[in-house]
Image (tube, rainbow, N blue to C red; front, side):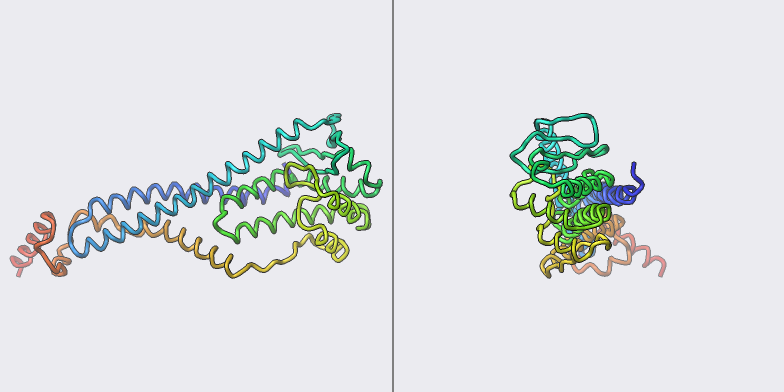
Length: 316
């Protein structure tokens, strides 16, 4: 496995561990909150604690639905897209020689993409090979070679899955888009650095984009990200520079929704855990004087308070 991919996998693994811990802790919190609600004493003080437990239970249940729904949506959507893409690639008429480059016998499309999770390969259509000059084709191959070296199909699949899992947090989706842009621009920079000029890559990008379709079933394709004008402008302005995507300001709405959802999920997780189960199932003697209407207490509370008062009277 490429060492440059290890940090990315660690980040993805950390997100997965956090989601798993959240769900496991959430189940425990549901059990604790349920215990509080079912066993709280009918005193004024305990009733308030019970209502707090009920609110925490509702928040935790809703938070669990949001997180679980995001996981189911993100994983199922990207598994479906992956299987659909696999079937589409298998059905393509290919001249496969077993090398890292596969020629797709289709002169009707201009297509170049990289496919494969752990051993990716470069796919070029015969239409693309015929339409580009030698230097343009070399630039495209170098661009896709950068995707292949970085295992970008695997990285982008994981990134898309995480983006869909946290679909309810707009800033997470924008962050994922920024990482994808960084990978695409890095591939552009690699091609330009190997060729020594940006004209060939920009010309190839214009031809493929003007054709209107890439034929690529997955987003790891030569013309699969961003407006071509943006990439071409960057090529001539930042040749040789770092692969930095353009900074896009997040809207106030995206920021507000993201902060609100993150705050809610934090409350939903930690709120029920803060409810002390010791409040349920009994009354502390020091609370007996706080009961506004003792006649409405449960029998357990009445006995406890009576015993406590008698003990204090005897001691006095």
